Length: 179
Image (tube, rainbow, N blue to C red; front, side):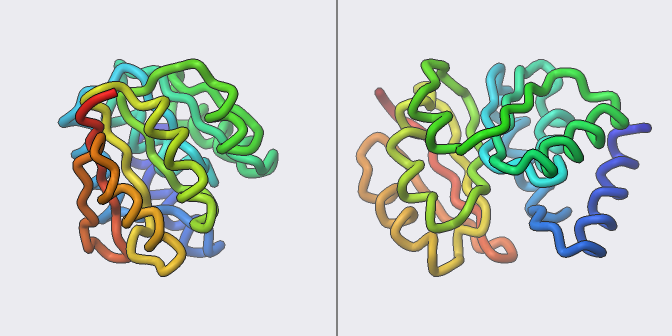
């Protein structure tokens, strides 16, 4: 199945089943961010049915993408969806996002954060550590009350340039300036 057609199918499926996907507007913004950075190594924290994973694969076909989710069911469904779309550059990891960040030694050019909102603040120091200089950290649902502490911490961290884009329920974008 062609990737754009698969995106439309996942949008319909997400809406019908109330699956937490970023949706077409924020999805386009995510695609633009990934295209600008041209990442070689992407980490997605929170897979769900693979909607944003597919967006990242479209935006960065040259990249190796690792996507982490604690739900085996979501991972299996996402893997099937991406296989049907013909995506081959994604590695699926079942497990806790923060534990993955703690144990990983890899460096990423682009990280997309879309896990439990209360966990964003706990994930932040590990995301910064795993992010390359000039790397982008994007976080969905940035206008949610649970994400306020995360946004404040990003804004106060001298290693980051940080902005919250008020697109739908928000997308936070941080650029890592230095180590």
